[in-house]
Amino acid sequence: MNIREVARKANVSTATVSRTINGSNKVSPETAERVRNAILALNYYPNTNARALGSGRSRLYGLIISDITNPFFPDLVKSFEDVAVTHGQDVIIANTGYSFERTELCVQRMLERKVDGVAIMTSEMDASLVDRLSSRGIPIVFLDTGRLGMGISNIVVDYGKGIRDAFGHLVEMGHERIAFISGPMNLASARVRRDAFVAASQEAGINVKYDLIEESNHRPDGGRLAMGRLLDRNSRPTAVIASNDLTAIGALGGIYQRGLRVPEDISVNGFDDIELCSFMHPTMTTVRLSRSEIAERAFQALYNENPKEERPGVEYRIEPQLIIRNSTGMNPERTLQRRNEPDSAAD
Image (cartoon, rainbow, N blue to C red; front, side, top):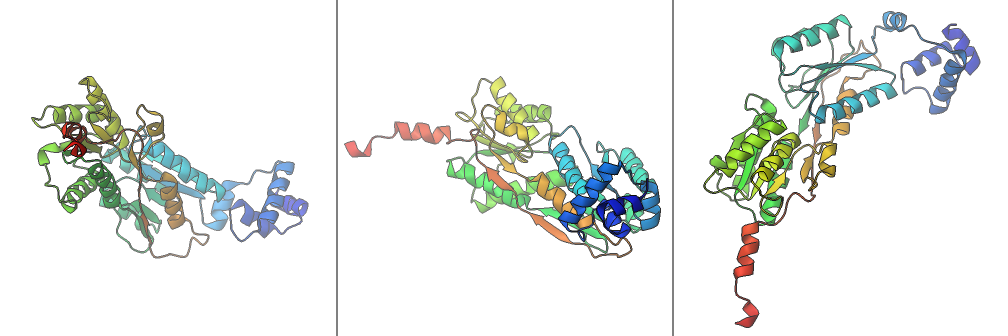
């Protein structure tokens, strides 16, 4: 079985069969469907090694993430793979676990497999490893941490907008003592979100209460411990914004451990909008960061039907969206104050 037999059955040229197999957008949907039906009918399996040698492309893309146990990243992996598959491409996934040694092995594996591009969806990537990729002419796209160059693109998330929207929502609900639980300060993404919280406080005209800022590890256990420290303050917060949803889930646990309620006693706001947020009790108010949009932009930055053509990098901007659910409510102190105020109508 060879490509000529597929072409004859589909009544197209061998070039059209090749374009269809390679996911080219130069083939009409109707023709592509006819070619795929012929491939299925003839039980044809393309020789990927031969195709790679002939086209100069491996049809493989690398996706580097930092923590596969964080539900944010499996969603991103699925979305990226979905986009790649629709273009007839395959994906190599690497989970670094924030380890330089493991990241180095991942990059080496991708170089050996001659990937056509790499999406670096982690904030921790040593410059020497980036140089090893870019020196081979491999297109790269970063999430937040890249500097534009030939073949190097960057996806910029407007964390400031997301945090400002969350902060503004809580201010509208009467909160002033708003705490923030950050991620590890050695991560650039955690520092960006913390700085956004400080800026949002200042923009709202509320003095930044640094004793209400706690660091965690971006996991539930860290969120629970950080929330416990906040609750030990002489003046505990009436609301808390967490740097990610896993931290917010841990904060919920820490609040319930103390016999307090959400949102009646303390409001909780997460960041990312992982699927679990809409099934919790109470459902979690959070800032949605679209993994599908990130994946689409990342693949768009990397995919090139002409691998010999080096393209300048592109910057894509993504705006998060506040999703209001049941874990945030009115400041309980304001509610109590209103109840204790004399009825003006009786004066």
